[in-house]
Length: 72
Image (cartoon, rainbow, N blue to C red):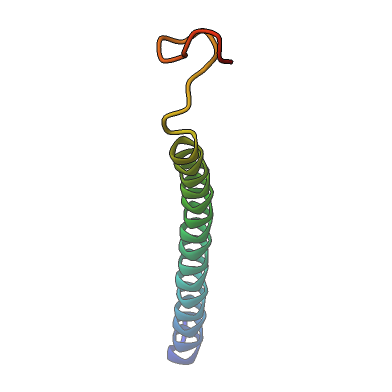
């Protein structure tokens, strides 16, 4: 292999390594984005549950110990 062929081959390898690094970075960013979306959805669900608990605070279910007789 001549020196010129060797340089060409090294350039190709370096280019391929660059593309590999870009692919790894892109995959990492996609994973971070997906995890962020899942966490966002989870937080929305928790917030909705907390709001529901807040607005229902002090209310009693029919037949519960806090219910007054004769009132439903």
